[in-house]
Image (cartoon, rainbow, N blue to C red):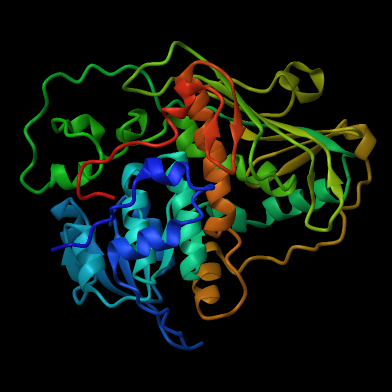
Length: 439
């Protein structure tokens, strides 16, 4: 009999922001295993949930560790990896893997809607967790996961790999050192369009190698469709979060980090009329953040953060200053002295003539050993994983609140402490009911 989590979501939402999470989760799963100390030269015993597509890069990044157990609902994918890792034990249900295996850590590379069930069971077992972005499928799940990880003192890392690249770190240093003055506005955009109404019909025959019910996991029961796989599930609210859910944690990560943002005070969004089943092909979202203290104790000004997808861009791109800048996706910081526009690997300061002969500020953020290595090293007690769930949980909450505002069709004020939206309709999207047996 698998342990189950009886914690009431509604009770959580009314319990001082989830302060009672520890007693609820740990009593529910009942594992209570201590975190095993790992020697500096000892390889980690890792479990892998999800074995193909995005998971392939995560597996390659951790190939120097012991990958002792692998899981996938697609037996073809599972068998293919099994041929490369013949000694790894194979599972089709991650709940069985987490219940039976004695691991140091787990890597979660599944569709968004199964991140939270896997992460919470792993954390309860005292496992260190690497999870693909976004951290969760709902705002409430992000808060639960972050609090659980903090309580269990496990090492965590979100799969926002660009956070470990040098360009992001140099941009953070420039923004925080005042190169473009006081920054109270930032934008992120991407040309992708994970959305659009889909008429799928009654369903397709389920392939014999694919366990559709396990893939659905916590989501409402529905027929199998070839269209969902391997990536089109992102279009559907039951499984993903559209373009914002897919790319928001990558692109909004940079202003979130540079401006030391945490929880927005107000959220708005706009786009085509919301569809109950699928995300839009274009949308904008905005978050307003109140003044806050920096890590050094100084007061940071109120800030607004803006998202544009499906080919939309910030209004500043109408300015001739941007005429020669070709950015399919990127981030724009608007400061009192100038602007900084960047993507994953480059940056430009505007107006260019104001920054002729520019000398970058001293490097204060050390280069990363690599996103996976950060996590592994931190487990061994060396350094820290900078995208841990304390940071990335709040980032994911912010991203998902943008989708909440779009689906609600109205702006709302946000009480982050108590996970309460001023709009009753928005509040209905903060959490969800899962199928029995899936958290």
